Image (tube, rainbow, N blue to C red; front, side, top):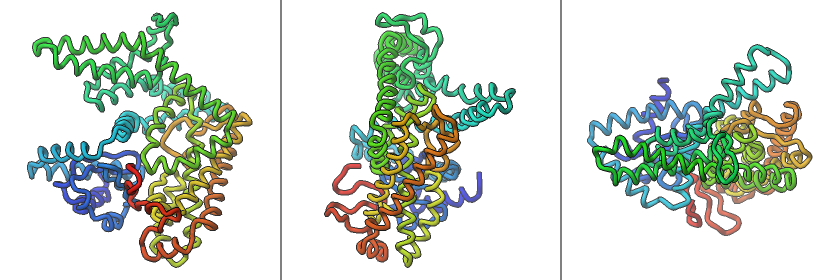
Length: 489
């Protein structure tokens, strides 16, 4: 483990209240996610000053330290090691579990809980989606160029293997998240992709392997979890090891074949049809709305609801046509940050933050700019959304002309999305449209922020280190990214 990661973890631990205050440790693509017994014990100012920390986000019961891709994994491992040692030494495991349960009950809402669990199923799959997506893109370039014909079949196999069995991984993660036995969730979900289902007829229609995709696998594993829990409470202990797995696989498996696959297949087809219709019919308007609203969705955590939609489109069509449009929100954010950098010439601290966060923003990691620059200032967050809307409208306009741009994986955006571009046109056309969208988002985000976003109030707030008052009269955005008084997050 890198020494810098250990040093960062060691610096973070006392600033979040020490090991006794840490109830849970996890991470996503860019953030170290901590469950804290008492978030008020965290020293936010000191945490932001730790080298390598790009920002902070408080979301319900989760205290999130933005570290960036790659780094976050090694820091999380070091942090877990430090907390684990202290927890064992101090005998805090029982107390921590009790506090964690109390805090989860206090902060849980149906929407938050559903989205958090949905993310727990799909987010762990993103690294494989990225890796396989990039390889699929490279393979496509080689095929189009007629290069290395001996290598392309191997690359196709490597890139496609995971997607062929993604339903199994979804099933395992679903059962794990909802309290079932992971391998049983995987076993039931595997039915969705088993070639033998082609011999089964449901509702007068012969099933097809893969019908229902990840949505069918999610539903199948969820049903298997409930069946398993029902059996655990009723089957005699002496027969549990035999009957519970058998009944779980049998009941959930038959329900999958004679109901869930058909229903999930209809939903999956509807998602693909709706996405194509939306872009080919109302592309510019749809792009404007999606690109303009994505930053608020990220801020509220509601973007997690799009993960299974992206995954369904990738599984069904080979790429998601929504991600390149949503990625324009990051372009608007970059443009807004550049305008703030130009206008606030004398705010050394803020300009330093922008210089540090801008490379990550260009590569699609937007949290440092959101929580460190635009959201605390207020108006620049809104003008960044205007830039995202303009970029989305640009990409959506070409979709109306039949030039849809898709991405073979989810996770990256900004410049990092270039290797993942896919569609019905040549790669040069896809590159030009996506690059044009980014440039539009940069330019409009910069212009809107320069003219409307940096007012005298924003300049005064930046100089005082306080968030700018909301010009609409509403509550001031919380620079930590946590809930404001007017919303529940």
